Structures are given as C-alpha cells and as structure tokens.
Image (tube, rainbow over all chains, first blue to last red; front, side, top):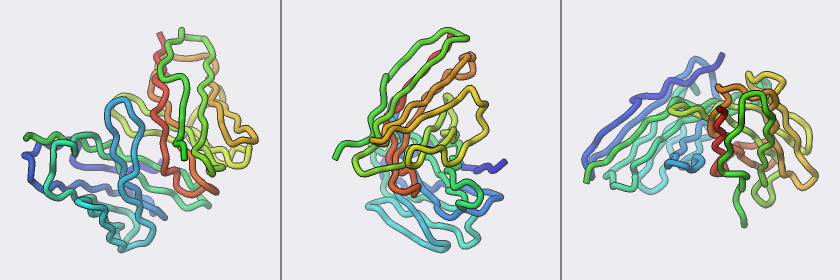
Length: 113
Length: 112
C-alpha cells in the first residue's frame, strides 16, 4: 500500500534555530499538505501545495512540492516555543486511485527556550 | 463560521460492544472524511462521504460503517469492538471532495 516516510521522527532544538523536515513516497501525489497537531486536538492545516515545484510560505513556514510529485519538505525559521507539537505531512492520491489522504508518521518538535 | 465539531470527546467501551461517533461538518462543506489515529501514529483514512454516499474507503473491515445526513453531518459506527480499535477518531470536512483541510478535535475511544 501507499506509504509516506517522514523524517526526522523527532527534533530537539534551541529557540531561534531553523528546522527542516521532509516526506518521501513511492507514490505520486496531486497535493501535499502539512499539518500541526497539539495534544488532544485535531491536525491544523499549515500549508497546502497543489503543483509540482510549488514553493509556498506562511509566515515563518515554507514548504515545497517536489518536482517528481513524490516528496515535500517543510522549513520553520527562527523557531519559538509555541512551535512545539507534532508535524504531519499528507499526500492526496489522484482521484482515480481513491483521492484519499495518506499521512506520514509525524515529526515531534521540541523547542528549548 | 463554525468549524468541525465531534461528539463525544471521550468514550470508554467494552470489547464486543458497538459505538457511534458523530461529526458536524464545517458550514458550507458537503464532504466528510473519517480517520483513525493510533497513539504515536499519523491518521489512517477510514472512509469518505460525499452527498450522503460513501466515496472511498481505506483498509478497514466492514464492521466500520458510516452515514452522512442531508445536512452533511456524519456518523461513524463500529461494531464488535476490539481492543485495537482504541484510538483517536478524527473527522474532517471539505467542499466537493477537495482536501479535507478542516479537522475536528476528535473522539478518544478506549476499548477495555
């Protein structure tokens, strides 16, 4: 079945540092999404990418949709304590393959003040 | 504009019992997707409902079933509960089967 490999699994960084995480897959996706999930809450959408090669920013967050449509990365610049949480990538399969979202295993981010 | 609301927030059931989880979609959204999230894992797609019909299903057995109502709210039913069904169940709504970008806070189901 389709799988997303998300790395790293966890990160411990100092406040102010930049962060990078990525997802790769053997499947082609039409859309890549990046979510953040806080304890006891559902995932909240951070960035959506719809075209291969697309680079999109949302404040301190930047994400790119890989040219091959099989990978994506998320960068967070100048991290702050409220960036703590679990970040998930998700790829949407083409509708002729069901159109469902496939999630990565998550990257747990800890930020030391 | 209200977001996605799920009820109940927490639930404890005994193995073999049946459970119904509920979801109200975000205003204006006609598509609801359900996901199961085990502890320490990413969400796994269960199924999607679009205009009251099932519109795609993940690798879950038939004892996982659902409904969508004319107001686009939805239910997830699980029969013959097993211990491994313990998880956070997430509902996400979207418009016209586009990305399920709005998630609810989930229902935490514990099967004992």
